[in-house]
Length: 167
Length: 106
Image 1 (cartoon, helix red, strand yellow):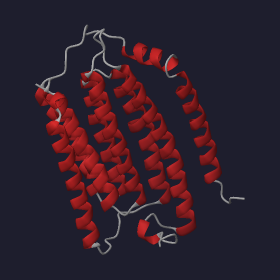
Image 2: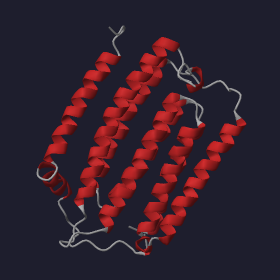
Image 3: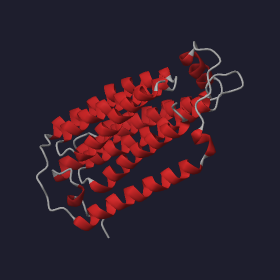
């Protein structure tokens, strides 16, 4: 992967990720999140994880973001009116975020593996979906079925929660 | 040359953006989107490690990618339940602002 492509996709991802937090209009935030996930999916594909990249677009940009937009329109959220900003909380939040990133940076700086380039693959053509699927249905069969139950429970939970009155 | 460190730094930056979003914003829906950003930052570093640590056969370590698959599935279920809770909250209080919801605040 050429370096400039890596920087283009990561900059798209980071700029639109920041736009999610900065925008005051919830719909603009949701649409920025879609672009952010597109950049992330391109980064996944640059790491030869084609299956994960496609799942990212299908599940996040396709399903989850439609759900977000539905809810924003259902609740009829407008651009937030400006409330009085709690300056202490705002500065505290920024400081905690900055300290957190400096810590991550220092840890990665000490990691010797972080300075090595990625080793080449044995063959440029590989069966990505096949490999993930084989592992999913052999080693991770039980977690896979538990995930199925989890999704079922989530479906039932959503239906119960969105009933008009709970008994 | 793109190294493992590049991906880890970008992943850390994305996590920090999501973290700052959770701390700074007061709209529950935006906080929810920031949570998604943090989950995806973790996914990015997992996939980067999977590509970095090849198996002896010369293919990526697919255990990490299966893990990412599980994370994406759980995150989708979590979004569905969370948004249903937000709708229920909006019905009860007509607000999505966290400072208006303080009945349990000590």
